[in-house]
Amino acid sequence: MYIFVDADASPVQKEVIDIAAKYDIRVFLVKSFAHFSPEKPADHVEVLYVDQSKEAADLAIFHRAGEGDIVVTQDYGLASLCLSKKCRVIHHKGFFFTEKNIDRLLASRHEQAKLRRAGKRTKGPSPYTKEEREKFVKLLESVIQDELMNQ
Image 1 (cartoon, rainbow, N blue to C red):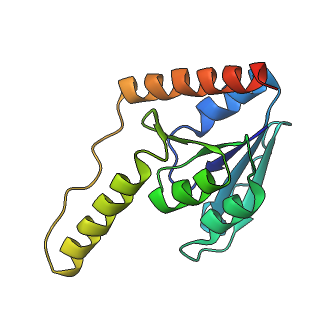
Image 2: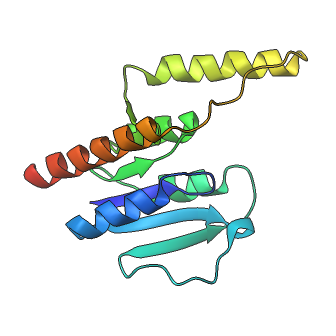
C-alpha cells in the first residue's frame, strides 16, 4: 500500500507524512515544478515533480496508483479515475469519494463550470477548518488500519 497526494494545493501534506511514518508507508507527493522545493523530504516520502500542464499531476497519480493504494485529492476527475482502479480516495475535508457519490460530485462540477462559462459567478471553496483537518486525520488513520488488517 502506498499513499499518493495530489500535492499542489493539498493542505494535509504534513498530516499524511506524519501518519504514514507511524505505519511505515511510502508517500508520493505529486506536484508541479512550480512548487519545487530543494528541501529533502523524509525517507518514506518521494516527491514527484511534473510539468505545469493542467492534468499532469492527475495523470502521474493515475498511472502509478493501484488497487489498495490511498489517494488524497480534491479533484473529482482524478478521484473518479482512481476509483476505477480500486483505490481508496479521500478528500482533504475528511470524506471518501465512492462509487455512490462520484457521479453527483462530477455532475455538480459540470453545472458549476457551465455557469462560469455563461458569465455567472460561483462560490469558491469555504476556508479549511480545524474540524475538517481532524476529520481527515481520523479517516486516514482508519483507512490505513483497515487496509493493514485486510492484508
